[in-house]
Amino acid sequence: MVGIQQCERQTALCRDYHCIYSFESGIAYTFDRYAGIDRPRTVSDAILSRETDFLECFLEAARQSGIPYLFSCAFEFNGVWPEMAAINRQFMGYLVRRSRAGRIAFTHASAAADFYRKHYRRMPESLLYLSDVFAGLTQGGKPINYPDTLEIENDRMKAIFRKRESLPYVWYDYTVPWRYPDWGNEAIPRKPDGYIVSDTEDRFKATPAIVDTRPFEVAVAVQDGADSARVRITVEAKAPRPALPLALWDLPREYSRRESDYSVQGATRFIPAQAPCTGNLCGILITDIKAGANTILLTVRTRPRSPKTMDFASGKEIMAKIFERDGSATAYLFATGPSPGTLRLDLPEGEAVSLYPSDSDEPVALKGSCSIRIEPGKCQRVFGLTSEKLMRYCKTVRPVVWDTAKALPGRPSIP
Image (cartoon, rainbow, N blue to C red; front, side, top):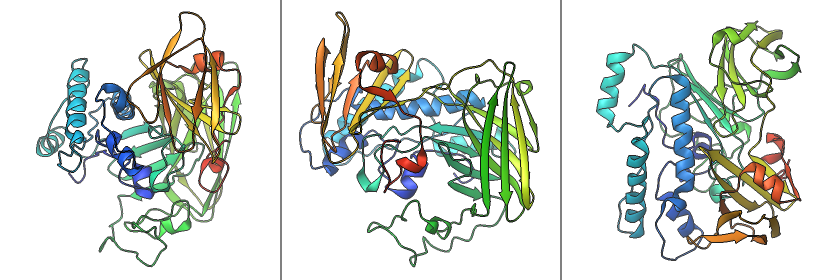
């Protein structure tokens, strides 16, 4: 399906860490086996929460672009882990039930290719905003809480940005011939399983090659006024570059698809994007850069709105990442270092949430004053715990302002 956008994996995670970070129902089972947990599974929608969070990001991408967004889902029916089949069957059932509300259709690769040839002369542009649905998991060297990513793809490029970074972490230029003679570049440092070492300059040496963004330095300043927000982007460039994509994050205004709500100077265009769980306004600027100093101005005229966060911390030991959608919420609780921690909740009478311990598929109802013990490497899930409830019922919790530089390997986990 060359030339058709398709997503099965969390693109950045699978590129740097392991292919297990996929839109695949069996992953819920596989992670336990990789961690040495050998036990029967109680198959239900609850154990598939990461996959359903993943799915909603895809559906939101299609809603915002107004075009079909193609993605694949892997199902492995093998005899190695017999319960894998039951989990796959459960997820298939979920997808069918979800499709009854609309927005999901099922096809195969050749039919999808025929559809695109019939309706489009070139690959239509799409955006995809992904949060770390695998928060709390670290297999393959993945950080325990990876930054949100924003992807843009069209017939000319694919660029992947990490939260709070303006330049692409990965940028494939489709306008130049790809030199990809083999899987290649064995001379650069790699992990034992062949993956490149993340967050090193070696990513620019891998094939197929990505655009080297080191010649550019970017600074962003936001001034929020009564009627509009003005964003000033400065780019210092050692060399010219056409169609440079730049990401903007969590602007203090409401999201809108109306072109008249945005005006740009010094850039070709601005493509707005809305984060699925927080509703925050983000977006991508496309600009032609000349050597030396460049200034870009973006004006946003939508109503003011304070950005929200999915990330919360309790002390230095515990983090929570909360996915909220359609009135439901799933909170992933995990220890950030080698020491365990305890999260205390004071739930009012009549309020209850469901805890799924890391070693069980059976829910535990939490009521009143209760504590959750969180061990390193054992992510806990709580259903029904929204961001607002966590802040209200846990006095030690504070929202986290994301800082990618502090959240990546070798640096403190809590910004």
